[in-house]
Image 1 (tube, rainbow, N blue to C red):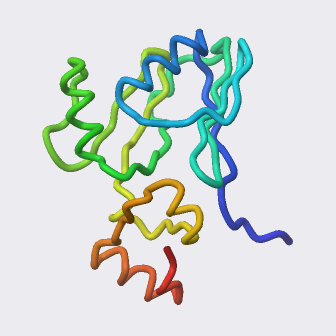
Image 2: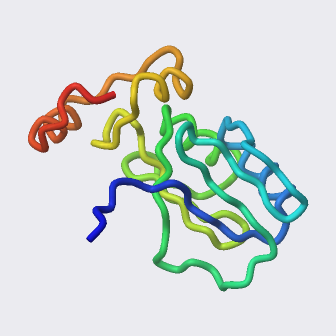
Amino acid sequence: MARAIGINHVALEVDDVAAALAWYARFLDFELRGQHPNMAWIDLGDQFLAISSPRTQGPDGGRHFGLVVDDKEAVRAALADAGIDVAPSGGLRFEDPWGNRFEIVGYRDVQFSKTPAVLAKLAPEGLEKTAAAREELARKGLAGSG
C-alpha cells in the first residue's frame, strides 16, 4: 500500500481564467508556472494551484481548501479593502466569484514545512515558525524542518 506524503496541486474551476487571475492578483502575489486560454498554473514553490475553465460544478458550499501564505493579515486587509466581508481577526475564509472557497493560513502557524531551498524561493527574507508549530513538529519527530 502506498503512503500519502503530500499534495502536488489543487485544481479549481472558474468561468474565465484571465478574469480569475486578475481577481486573485488583487489579494495575492504569485508567479505563473504556465498559462493557456482555458488553463493556468499558479506556482507555489514545489506545488501549484491549477485553474481551469469553464466551471462545471456549483458553488463549493462547505468544501474549501487551505492556502498557506507568508502574511495572512495582508490578505485580510486586501480583501476588506476590496469590500469582501471577512472576519476582522482569527480565521480567514472567503469565496471567489466562481464559488471556490478559500481558507488563508499563515505559514508560521502550521506544521506544514518547506525545504530550505523552496522556502528561500518563496520567502527570501525568511519565515520563522511559531512556538506552537515548532512543538507540533517536534512531537511528530520533524523538528528542524523548514
